[in-house]
Amino acid sequence: MPNGNVVVAWEGRSVILLLADATDPWSTHVERELIRRHQPVSRVDPRSLCGGLSFDWRLEGSSRSSFHSITPDHVPVEARAELRAVLVRMQIGALELPEDTFNSEDQVYAQMEWSAALFGWLNALSCPVINPPVPGRSGRLFPMQASVQGALLQLGVAVPPHAVASTRETVLEHYAQWNELARAQSLGPDAKVHYLQGGDGHAVVDAMLAHGPILLQAVPEGSPVRAVVVGEEVIGGTRRTAAQDGCLRESIWDAAPLPPSLANVCRRLAGVLALPFVDIEMVQGHEGQLSCLGISESPAYGQYSDRLRHLIVDRLVNLLDNTEERRAHDPYVWPTPRSDHRQPGGAACCPIS
Image (cartoon, rainbow, N blue to C red):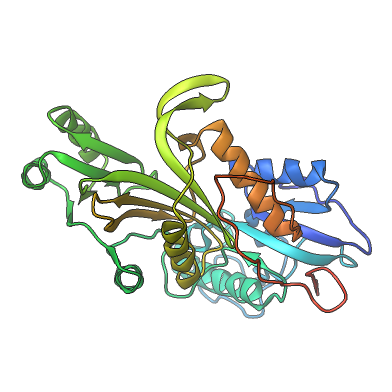
């Protein structure tokens, strides 16, 4: 089985590349399912691309006088293989270069150049790339960001009132204005989300503020819904008690049918955002009005039931290996014709230089 440091050579075959570190659960389960289907797959830790290659220019401020490696087109996959598809499970800007390679003067500059090179390579591939980086967009998306909000409003989806606050007084002031019902998201590295309701929310606010500012959003009245878009398919979810890791857990997201109109809105939003794999959290009001609470290209694995996880992984693998397999009478997925990425006379692939 391939991992972050070991690459399987697939001579003369098209390989599915998973660009992800060893801790990412989605790529782990996608890799297992691809192996079960006997599909050639190679998993590469993005950090391994940073070492052992060479820069095209000298960094005068560096503590070392030699040239340094930062060439992302040297992907450690057998050179005679072809890439059939790529799944990107990393944040380009969050990637750290090897320690002691650059001094503080050159570290930021070197990371920018490395990120730009990797970005250019991923976006130049002719094979399908799931969630390639988008220029000028940070790794985290929020409904109130100008570009995202514009796409939502164009689709008729509202963005609830929101505020970024770093003091308890400010948070509780907004919380009271919104009838003590709100969604709070940490702005720190963990990006944890909590739903606050009533007096119990005060203690949660205190714990979150201890780690920095939080994004607070009003939660409109209505039914919470979840949509995970994978390519052209939309998997619905709702909060309820469901099985997770062999145990029943309360209030996690489980598979549930979505109305076709709602699924279509989510599919179109994913297309506008150029995210073939994205999680969208909404509230559907009593009169049908949709409000968007959250968008994530890195859905938290622990918030889904076993059944919903299985559906997501299955659809990701179908998208990567370009199969048209669909379970008959599957009520949790609203299928539409899939765009054909295949090149004439063969599977979707592109050569590795």
